[in-house]
Length: 136
Image: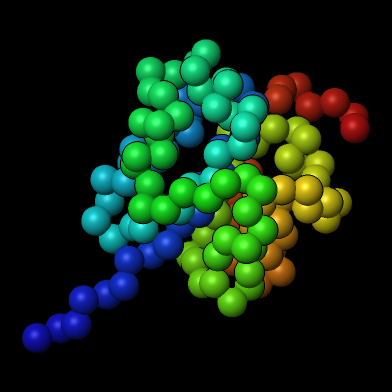
């Protein structure tokens, strides 16, 4: 008998940028995959934008995840390099979140988890919605 493989842990962080249908579709896809364990971080601004741009409530989105973390929970697994995961996606990624990650400014769990993901050499995907990008 072959032992069962552990599910792959994926961290999905949702920020307050426009593009919630992308986040909802991704969360639904990951939640439906039998080999994925979905860990979700939803910023406060994301909850507001979610109500405006999607067909699902914040409670409906969080119900898709195996585990949900508060955006200010620095003791959460994703804040530590010793907590193993297989990648992180920030979808949608606000420009403020991009700037914080790029400059190492960890003012919430999303920033800290992304920083740890980079430090540990794991995959990090940022789904930006701002176009055109400014010179900044």
